[in-house]
Structure formats: C-alpha cells, structure tokens
Amino acid sequence: MYVKAFFLTVKIGWIGIALSLLIGIVAAFILHFKIPVLAQMVKVYVEIFRNTPLLVQLFFIYFGLPKVGLSISAEVCGAVGLGLLGGSYMAESFRSGLEAVPVLQMESALALGMNRLQMFRSAVSYTHLRAHETDSYLVCRLLLEKKKKNT
Image 1 (cartoon, rainbow, N blue to C red):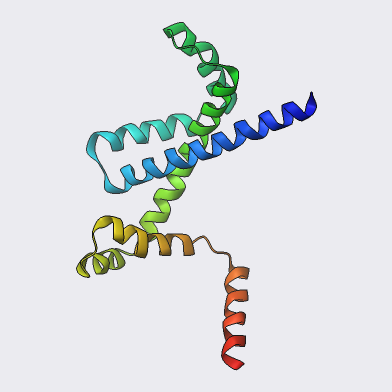
Image 2: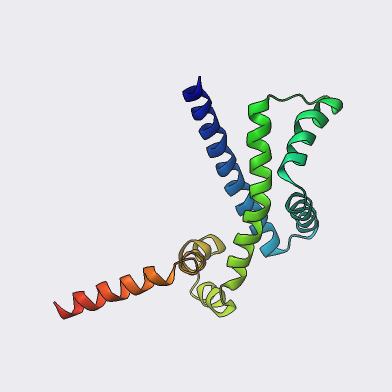
C-alpha cells in the first residue's frame, strides 16, 4: 500500500513539474513580448497564485470547481494545483532570465538574419542557460580548459 502511494505521489509530482515548466515558459514569453491583453492576464495569474497558499488553491480547485459543474479527481487536482503554483514562480524566473539577456545580443542575432525562433534557440537560450551556472561549475570548467591547453 505504501509503495503504491509512493509511486502515485511521484507521478503527481512529475506531472506538476512538467505542467509548471510548460506554464512558466509560455507565461514568460507572453510577459517578455508584452502581448497587450495576455500580459495583463498573466500578471494577474502570477500575483494570485504566488500570493495564496497551495492548500487554499487545492481546496478551491477540489471543492470550488464542482460547484460550477467541473468535477475532477483528487489526483488531477493535486497535479493541476502544483502546476499552477509552480508555473507562477517559473514564469517570473524565466522572465527575469530573458530580460537579463543584453539587448545588443538580440539585435545582433536579428542583424545576422536570424528569425525570432533561431535567435532564441541559439543566442538567447544559451545566455539564459549560462546565467544559471554556478561559480564552482565555471571554476571547474576553466581549470579543465586550462589543463587541456597545457597538454
């Protein structure tokens, strides 16, 4: 029984993480490009879900949605609740990472003839991912590069 509950918990957690990543990336791009109506809706979503406790959100999803005719199981409620809460935090994290990329780098990519997808795939995402590297990782990488040059 405990093994079955363990795997159910892991499954709900992974679904919540995947959902939060998806929501976070979409919301971050909406906020980054400042799409007029959608950006305001995403800002409201982020403020509501970041400023209310997860338990309150889960109660609203599980007990409140059936009042309006939408009944979902407890597992789906848990996954959706985790996804919505995590998505609000991920949206702000990804948005700040996108805004940390220098404007000159984006303009340079566009000047090279890249479309927006190519620009984000090659130039912006690389800088965005490198911004999350730790100092110890960078030190180890620099030491390895120095060792390769010496040999």
